[in-house]
Image (tube, rainbow, N blue to C red; front, side, top):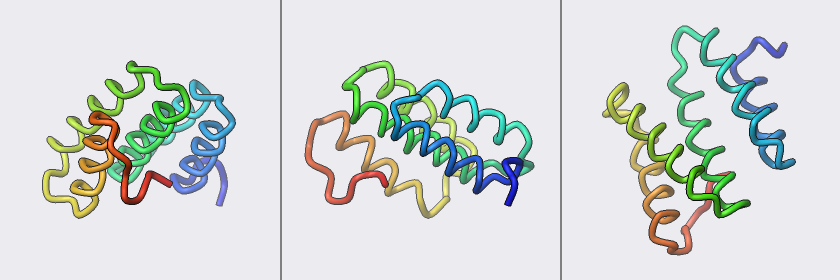
Length: 104
């Protein structure tokens, strides 16, 4: 798939995040979300990448950004099956507990 495909953009954003190029990852994801008619999965990816940024940098702004993105998803997709998992990841990041399964 081309870069205009949500899955490709999500993978590129994750690669940028793993390389420490956080702003590039956010940009790619934001552009993909703007193009996608149903960006729920991209919204979950944004939370995951912000938590990864927090894990790499301990920057409290990344944790706050993840919380903000989660609040958005909770209001738009309150019954989504991934919501509980992502809520757990965020809670574990906020409390400093070791996650049972950290964000990929």
